[in-house]
Image (tube, rainbow, N blue to C red; front, side, top):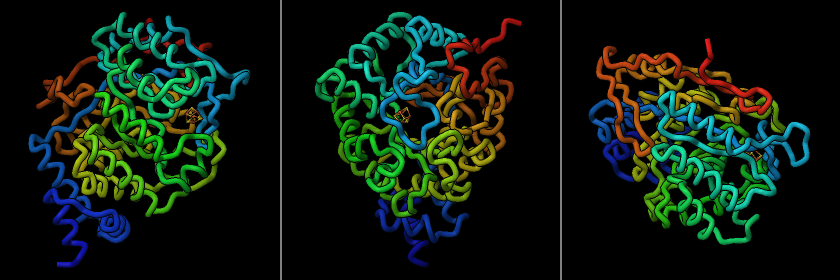
Length: 389
Ligand code: SF4
């Protein structure tokens, strides 16, 4: 048995592998044994063979942002003629429309608007909860929390406590990008450090607000920096247990200041997925991003350790502004899962199965549930997701 075989076996059996070992697997392990070891972890964790998906809607309340990340094609600086903010009525209308299509969750996310402090988020979250008590608010991220705390001149603890009281259920893992200092500073020099991003998550977890964690690959980071990103998250998870899932995705290169820089290849993505499943012995779920990598690669990840294919994306504007063109619908997402040899199931935010589609006869029939991506959130183009015809 080679050293790599030994690490793969230990990871597959649920043992802990070090960051150095993860880097060795990422760069040297043959693809098929790597994927098989990661899939063994999935089988052990989820022996029912179920792969989940979610129906939710990303609602962006503003594109005005003072942070100017170089990879971002979504934001506009304050006073820019293309800057916009949605009214509370429009946000509520979009929530209601999502519920009509079966959404169980909203992801409210937006730029760092210079005037949006804790009070703004309290008003928004409490209004959503008042109108739709059953809708889960899995929203914002540590960057928005730091920004609102700064605007309102309060501590992170107070900011999190207040928005939790207003209705925030859990925090999205957005804004992680690359956590190590060098690549993070290169792409988002005005954003908080990776350590600070994790500190805010740790505070939130301590206050009972759980989250997911993400990673954006492909802006010029090294292999070692990719693994360091995983290590930083695992260290916090050892203390808090508050990360429900890890969700890596690939940088999209259009309409931003990094245009033309490297992208992660499909193989790099698949290898990272598999290594993440082996490395994160303390994170329950692994979600892949069909939106950025494409549906074919998304389906392949189901054989590399992934147990969740994420959302149908009733609305998405941020990543699609940078070039993500992939769309899907409920039937197709279910078909991708089933034809990969898994049992599709709709889940809620807590990964509880809402509907298990054992056979095609169990499949939903609502063909209105499909992706709407890119620019539809502009005020001048009020959707609707469902045509009147
Ligand atoms: S990624 Fe977020 S924080 Fe960065 S510029 Fe875009 S909207 Fe602003």
